[in-house]
Length: 310
Ligand SMILES: NC(=O)c1ccc[n+]([C@@H]2O[C@H](COP(=O)([O-])OP(=O)(O)OC[C@H]3O[C@@H](n4cnc5c(N)ncnc54)[C@H](O)[C@@H]3O)[C@@H](O)[C@H]2O)c1
Image 1 (cartoon, rainbow, N blue to C red):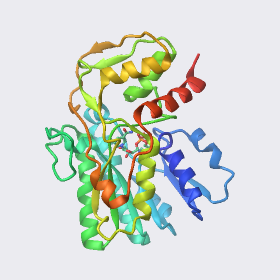
Image 2: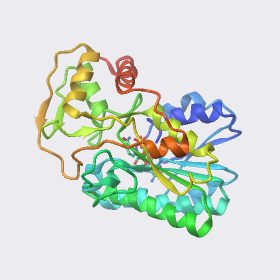
Image 3: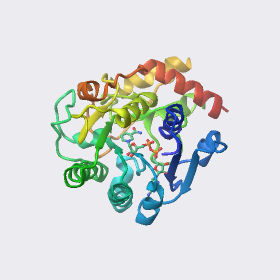
């Protein structure tokens, strides 16, 4: 996860006086350039390696107290096209990391789950205890993580916390490639006068979460000592949703453009509406999102403007 979450997690872990921060990533989807600011820090170590290799995970967990497991192949459409790739990285890789963390005796294992686990659950807002039928191999892989986390906590006494992220966005998110997310694609389209495509009629809603809020949840999950906070999965979101159509309009306003999106076919596996109830994370982790949608979009837009504008 070398682009979106990792850089901010790194700043925060160093701010919390971490003696050593070791990053494991195979760079299949992340960029080494995002780690440049940390290279000269003697407490920083990077292993280029794959979590599908157990020994690599074991090497990465040696003498580590906290694991923040983010590595995965994201994207619902990618998982529908290549379910074996998704399973290898997201399910087998996850299990390797759990085994390695167990054997290294780590104190805390925090991992990224996903709102995709809610599948066809119709309730709004989504509450952690009520999930539906998975709609994609990606969702299955993330639910598998939650099941493994539960049995590792039960059988090995590990302190495990899962974070169900809802549409995280922010600077450094890659707008390129077939599996790019909506916000970086919209940014790219608005800045470079390209057509922005919306899948379906744009009425589908999402709880877009600025990356700094997701980072806060990770740090809080590491340091909580609330006895009932462990072995749970928490929604990590803003707790407010917007339709994709309105999101595009909001972004166009920030960009100062009159642009209209182009609508195309709905994507299979996508959930219709997604809004999180974040009260569990508030209660047990003390999580409180600090950055609202408009503010996060402005920060992200300014980053894209300075980086990608032609
Ligand atoms: N961004 C979101 O909206 C969102 C929503 C829900 C859940 N998540 C989850 O959050 C986590 C981080 O997501 P992100 O958006 O930062 O994605 P990202 O693609 O930016 O980061 C994933 C990282 O994992 C690395 N990786 C992939 N397979 C690997 C492997 N086999 N071995 C080692 N490294 C590997 C990639 O190189 C990449 O740097 C993922 O687990 C993702 O499933 C993200």
